[in-house]
Length: 270
Ligand SMILES: C[S@@+](CC[C@H](N)C(=O)[O-])C[C@H]1O[C@@H](n2cnc3c(N)ncnc32)[C@H](O)[C@@H]1O
Picture: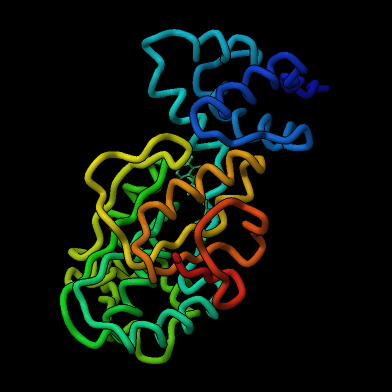
């Protein structure tokens, strides 16, 4: 009879150390109910290093030589779920607004994950802006997500939310080895600059003012004080009359920020 190997368990103090690591690196608070998820996601790293316990793994993380591994932990414990034209009402609203604007226009997708959000924005701007130059800054904390965004290659199933004809107009469908996938056209990718920015820290100098900021489905990971600081930091980069979009499940109600509500989860900088 073969006995099942026992899986290492993630104890209280180990979980607290990981909560601290995440809070310091990303500002994200891992709630106690996330413990099984954390254990599951880090298990493959224990296997990778052939370690028997999470405390051995934490010791490894403390070594200076493993700074890259700490980044990987943040990547593994962050939720990167995203898709093209997520929360479509935002893109409809933006399309109508763009129809009344001329460039130059600067947009920012401030937690862009693997790129679906900034490339959805790029398509909407291309379709609706009345003329003039435009660019998009797409930033995230996760390097691996930014790399994926830089490739701009996605499974064809991801195109299911595209408005009619847009796949053909804005993307190249793969053939041969690339069959079943598509790539966002170079003309759009060139408008999108990808950059690592941690929104819980002071923003890099020289970002300039934006006309539109998408800050969606990321505020949920922070406590209220941190959320308010992030929103204040980003709104200060928005020009008066510029638009801030947050996720439909998120709220900035009661925050001390100079904005007014225009539409559900769409705000205008005063
Ligand atoms: C659920 S995704 C949202 C993606 C996209 N905005 C959307 O709505 O589909 C959350 C993203 O926030 C990023 N993130 C988490 N903490 C961050 C931080 N402190 N600074 C920048 N990005 C962060 C994660 O890496 C992840 O890609």
